[in-house]
Length: 127
Length: 127
DNA sequence: CGGAATCCAGGGCGATACTG
DNA sequence: CAGTATCGCCCTGGATTCCG
Image 1 (cartoon, rainbow over the protein chains, first blue to last red):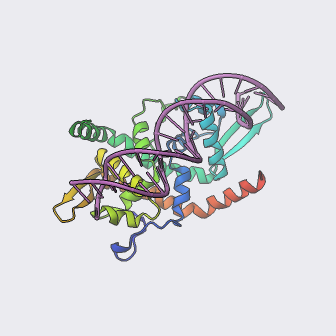
Image 2 (cartoon, protein in one colour):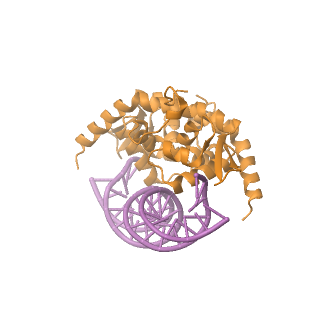
Image 3 (cartoon, rainbow over the protein chains, first blue to last red):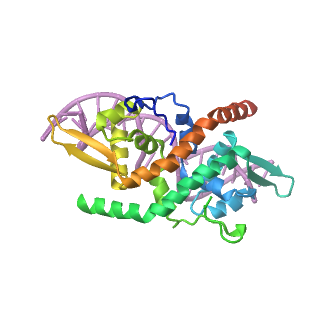
């Protein structure tokens, strides 16, 4: 993995100006991940909302705005009546699906083991 | 990518009981990522803190607790004086570094393009 | 349909002080 | 050294209402 490792391991420091910081702040949330996953083809607002069980309209709007601002999706107003809005991935957003997919696969593969650890931890230090 | 795609794309829905949900809530934050990245070898609390420029001690403690609860790191109290505490990766935590590394690489590779999009977006809809 | 605006409660997080 | 404890702010996110 290419997480910054200087020549000697004694120098690994995550500096505050590391370019990954603001990016991770923007994209490292589960709704962004799920929106990108659902946008395997262009979809409309309520279509996305329906597919992301549990998301509120406010949060979905904010998530879409941020993804749009970051150049990962495109918002297109359809000349229909009533108006429709279609969201689709840009090449940039498309390229993010691969690393996100890896992470998603990992969570699914290890969900059981993680839950076992959690239960054991909570049992040990019972409050 | 293996994000759930049923036979027809019309059925892609992220159900609230998807096992990835609670996991992503736990791990999809930047400090968890950075802690795992820094723990390429066992390290002590203040050592980790020094390497994660900008993290407060409170947040680092919480992050470490959560990672420990999820079975990704191990906390070991060293019999020194004054006491030292050493954190190290478990195999589970180790296995998470790979997908995290992918994501990190992606952010570094695309940081510039994302910033350009942001500036353009902010310029267009100047408030 | 796809939002924007408003109100409001909870908690995330920083700052600070204290401890074994 | 490696935390815990406490206070207080702000921001996130839910619920609701209104609009083009």
